[in-house]
Image 1 (cartoon, rainbow, N blue to C red):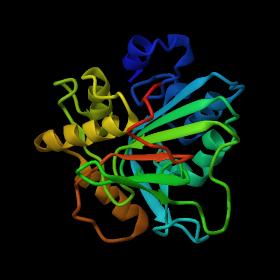
Image 2: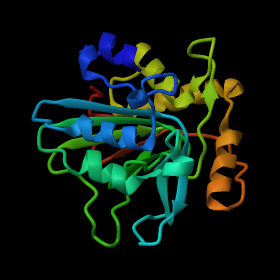
Image 3: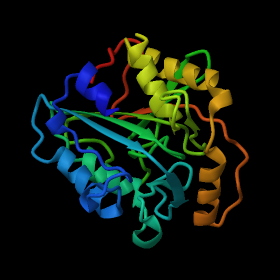
Length: 259
């Protein structure tokens, strides 16, 4: 993803912060505290004309929501490397940190490659698209009236799967080690020229994952993780369909895709 941002979209390398388990520097590892600090860093001092990108590739889970703010009754969560001792990061906090503060003229794209990631940013609207490409915008605004949008900015999120699905890995990208299938499909859609609009982007990503189906792995492991965290039953649904959510509804086949 860093290569894509710096080479294709000309993001300055100095503007990119990467947290990875391969890092020896304790401040560059994906711990709970470091991820929270990185999200705050991302939006700090943003101003009109800024284009921000938040990419997460790792474990995701769910936990029961008791406030009635979730359509399906569950909050979505990121699982940092130390989540067993420091806890998970809940979608409400993600929304409050990198969505709600965005001022007019600032654009944020999120690419969330994890299980149960459909509404990971808690954005108000989800683009429900079928396999033929037809879509409607589902209203996910909380019944409580709590505002989940921005302070005038624009946020669009691509996620690896629906909230009730798992995301898998594939060796197709590097041919050496596995990477998130959704990250792979996101990059492929851009590199192959299928990212003219958000609608064509989403369709291309879904097509890539369907065609790479035989190489997918890892969904069972993350399903077991969710089962252990929630004390629930193991879902046998290992399919995944990338999703699109946004702070405002728009025509996905008319709006040009741009980072």
